[in-house]
Length: 335
Ligand SMILES: [Zn+2]
Ligand SMILES: [Zn+2]
Image (cartoon, rainbow, N blue to C red; front, side):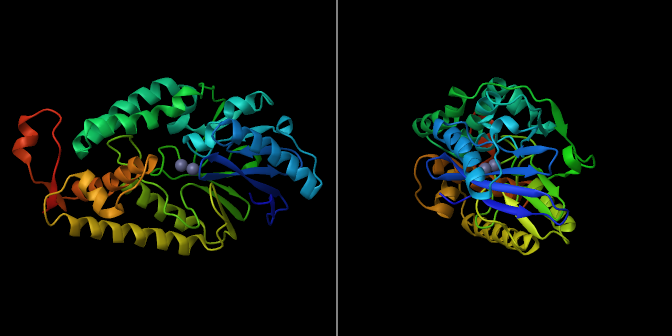
């Protein structure tokens, strides 16, 4: 894994960064903001045993590399950028080392503090989505068990304060609420640097899921939030994402992400010259994919179909069937 990095903001604050392996192929960036008073941890990995080891090893590596002796026990505040398990799942482990208050946006609070309930509700909505997408019962069961995996080890943890746009948080860090990838997704401005979390990543286009599964997600919200961030990053020198490398030109990166979504929307319109279910559209877009990626591909396709359906570009091709039977598969066609 990569060596830890150190960034200096124009106001003299230090942001340390190091990677942790959250799941098989997923690497998350952990950030530690140090201004001499506060020591702020931003995100904490998935909570898998390997990830927790990486988290502690990352702090040890900061001492070795930069000569600043730091440990999890020195953390004074914990900020969670959004309610995805690879960003907050390590809270149980972090809590063993520090009582530092935890802050998150209000729309992701219950994911951290009432996780068991949230998973059950999301599970039911996901099931409905997969049914109407035309996923077979057998495959649905496989996909749902993958989805429920996080429930097996994360225990709900109380949140002590909220991250709110327009109200700077600890250390005067500015908060921008950018829903879409996640309901409570925030970007955090630290002087001339922007922690873009999973809203803007350097290489991949952040994952999208339909808002029919979770409110405040979906492509409409996401694209609005890209515009919003683009308007406030004019003087930002560096973007620091939740995954992958730093971003030297956030505006250009946002343009590239938007055009990738526009291309995908155009592809969906093309695919839907004939009536297609979301499962079929997903296969046409992404080909055959494996395990967890099947679910990601279905959600991504679903988000794009939903966007076009909301706008009347796509319509249901089998309306009477949808009207007459319960749990119908919806087939979409160009209007
Ligand atoms: Zn995420
Ligand atoms: Zn992530």
